[in-house]
Length: 121
Image (tube, rainbow, N blue to C red; front, side, top):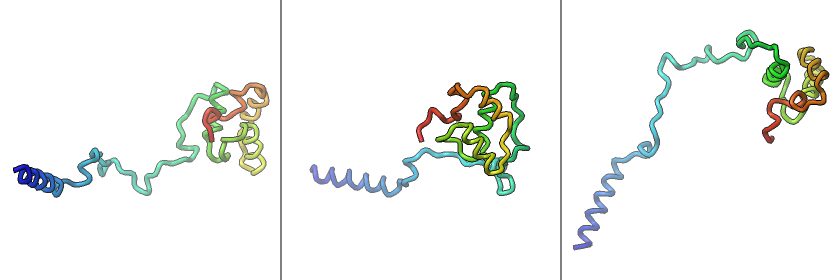
């Protein structure tokens, strides 16, 4: 009797597994609709013209923006002044205002180290 019951349970299990798909195990995520998709001609821009206007009255905000400006190269592993000098050396024309702020506050770590100073490489 046990053998017959086990055989029936096995058949039931195999039948359930035959109709189950691997995607049933994962949560369903809705894809962006036609209106929400970005086409090749609609990719986000990184030009300076498209950046939002930010109140730059604070020196640290100016330095943060300098850190986030990719055109001056990577900022991890070097000081802001080293990055500024490297950008100047390569003719990238970094803002003089940044150098002035750095020279004025060269003994303060929050000014000399980049935005990512707290993260390991």
